[in-house]
Amino acid sequence: MAAAEISIMDKLKNIIKAANTVLSIKKYSLIFILLSVAVFWIIILAPGWVISADIQSQGFTANDFTFLAAASMLTSLVITMQLFSFKITGKIGAARSAFSGAGFFSALSAAIFSSATCGLCIAAVFSFLGASTVIFLVDNRMYVVLGSLGLLLLSLYFSSKRVNNDCDTCHV
Picture 1 (tube, one colour):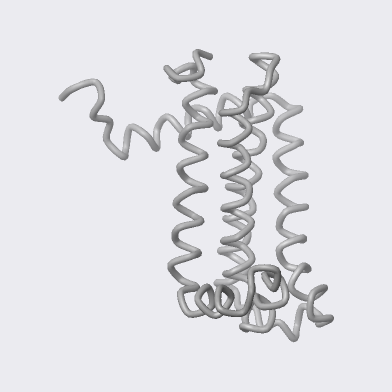
Picture 2: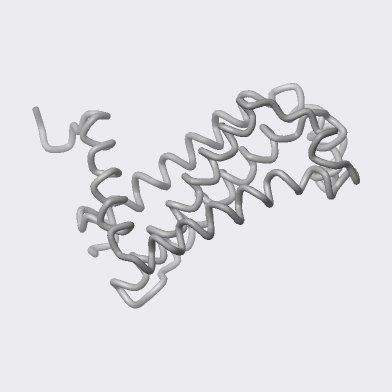
């Protein structure tokens, strides 16, 4: 097996190793916990702010809360790993900013599309895109969520490479 061929299990082990490295430091564990809670509550409360509804009327199920909690934790882990790698290198390059920004915004879009229980919520949040784009996004909501989660996992993988000093591109 060539060095370039890394199995999914090896990638997952690298992500877990990087997460353990970062979260073993008390300061980063606290940042992760605080970010997880903050992102979760923003995701839960944002649709209600847009259409002036309370949490009960949004129709969240236990599965919705579980998914949103997992997405919040993954988003917080990416941000925490980015902070850790910025601290190690002492600089923030354009490529690093793009990777961390892509991870954050993909998690945010996945959370918005999965938490919005009606098209009205999505239309209100994404009204700046225009009616035809919003209709397309609502019709293809599952694909948007899956694509966004894929980008989030990709960002998590690249962040873990930097934390584990395995990144050939940024030479951490």
